[in-house]
Length: 255
Image (cartoon, rainbow, N blue to C red; front, side):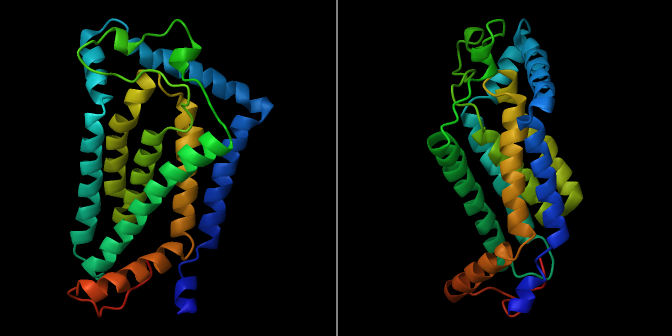
């Protein structure tokens, strides 16, 4: 059993992914390169924010896109992708694939609630003001659109919960469903993530240095070590006792 789990330990991929994450983070933290990120943050904010300065169409478009009701739509899209994986035809039992989805769902929830909101906010006491509060010359969408509640400012913008969830979704779809579906998920995630950037409630680096690094690190640990295999298998066996699955005796291959 141990040797079977060790097959799921991809040491080189794990080192490469963590090295990439560390390089990204240190490029932001080191004084010699931090200025470039500040420059990019500022330019990107004023560029995307300019779309809602005078355009009635874009003001209403991004107001709708940033409304909390859309969170339910995003959740449904994410569930649809995951269910399509569960029901796609392959050699794995559906119940086992469901256990994989369940594992990743718990991972997303844990990361957002524990890492984002507890470790960064409560333990590290990171309270970063959003660009809309940092600069006086930006456009507040809430002052342009009055018929809908819009979030366009934050005193705790780092890291973004929406961005973390969206990037977890993208990385997991790449892992479970391959390149084609991963690209589709990524393109959809832009609509998921951009509203907070356009309205100025998040910096670009909240997404790249916060949401991306957190989701990439956690997903790498899950899929390049035996963690996913161990937890998913245990969940599968536990559910198998309650919900017999067709094809339950099929040998589970490396995933």
